Length: 72
Image 1 (cartoon, rainbow, N blue to C red):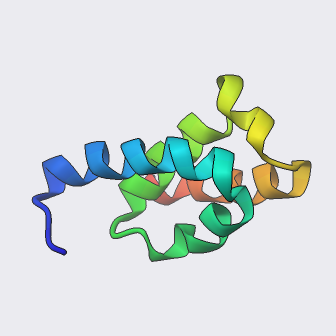
Image 2 (cartoon, rainbow, N blue to C red):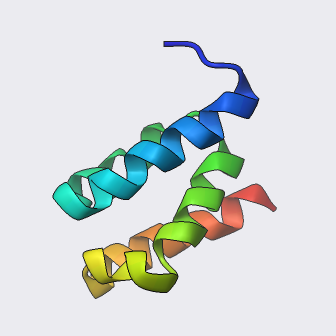
């Protein structure tokens, strides 16, 4: 599927929120396959802060946080 880059963020945010509650390990494992470093960093920031972080183990949160530096 090819979405315009401006639509990719919204699409992946929508599925990531649900995916994080159903299969957080699978989401973390699939992060490397997201299309852009900026998208990975943006989602990693959102998923590793606030109430969403409760879906992840400390090790999974550490792995997500590794993606925060990708957009720099």
